[in-house]
Image 1 (cartoon, rainbow, N blue to C red):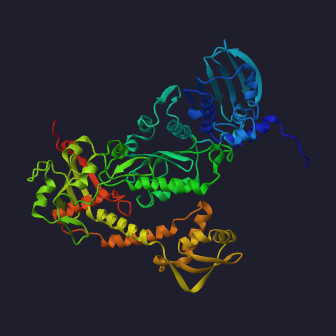
Image 2 (image 1 turned 30 degrees about the horizontal axis):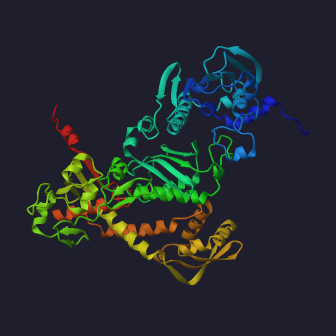
Image 3 (image 1 turned 90 degrees about the vertical axis):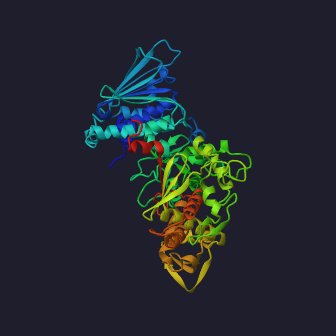
Length: 620
């Protein structure tokens, strides 16, 4: 069979197979072009889910009449001119394939006018056959009409889904864009009726966040903003109890470009591993910024994926940033409190700055302060012993000694991050215990209303964090094997084991390569001596090969410590004294991740006084 040159129209239609998957792909390419042209408002008109009509109008810089023909030519672009430009591209589009590919499978019209021109110009393309440029009245900006998508490629059109499904794909992409570009107004209409409008605003105003992901996400999101090693990670992560059954609220942007990246997704999953309920998915909107030369955006035809020059550094940066931010999700603290404490922290307060860029004021102790004389309870909690401590625990007036308003020193710093009503009352975030319900729940009163605590779940988390802290101080010890294990692995895993020998040694494994596809294991982590070392080592090697690091050992260790903490936690129907209950509340306020137990279940709930009033129709 002889080699022949393909016709230009067929070349564009083949390219359309990569660029134009469905109507949402067309909307993506055209709206990105509008943003690259400096548009501040984009109107998207759709009919029949975008199959019959897609019209994109913008108020950008426009296209000169003499360049309309060039705009629908393959590999013609104003965004790059050299390899150096490609290696540091900052625009959303750059390939120069979108317009000719779309025009080859539709009835296509391009009309544009620059602000300095007297009138606009238009160009029509019918299934790849280019017409003439003609004058046309047009406002400054550009309008692109795509009618009857895939009309000349019926095999492709058969693969399109129902109108509602195709419209859903477009709306989801526009939602992703709205999160990334809150400065741009987006107006969407479908079948002649307005369907959605994203008003322009500030990235951190919460308005765009509520419009796109709902008010629940906006109220439960933690603000993250951290820089280091030439990287910046900012955005929002949802608190662990706001989790999803699917990954439908996971948005990642690299230098403003919406992408999917397995390494970053794995880092986020690992950061949530200790606080997320089994089978649930975290929700987040994260923006990663770095030098464009450190990321390759030219690895996917539709630009959905990128490749990092140092993926291990990116993975570690994202993981540590989010892990430390989630560590500050302590019981009794709201996202707004976490974001505001730095500005309201008193001089000399013991405050810790998390990786998220916010400061969380930490109480100086676990409940002992003033005239309290702590003693150890059978639960390992600090409880007040003095007869007067019980009265002092609830007092917000002047104590008998006349030293001023009573507030235990351990709580004074914590008060700075609370709402005014809580701070003025001198009541700590979780308040003071008033009763125990069915031997399971602690009922406490704080400045806003009622706090309900699952005492077993809360004590389990407190014990778990203490065990982790203690073990971290000791480190991982290796236990030599009496008889070394010979492990058969693939060549890639053997190469990884040889290359990462020091990393494996730090994890407690002494491994040497004994052949092209075999390893000698001479020691394993002492804490996991009863585990299956072969399977654990295989998993570690897989992680090291794919992500550059592994938390398998730490996860296995944490699972063991979690079991130990669960067995050591206070059980249901155990009657606690009021000082013991208060001591548990104080420990929750200073324990990292105390909002969830070791299994990801919530440890506490709050009911405001206004909410309780509604139960009983008070004030109506």
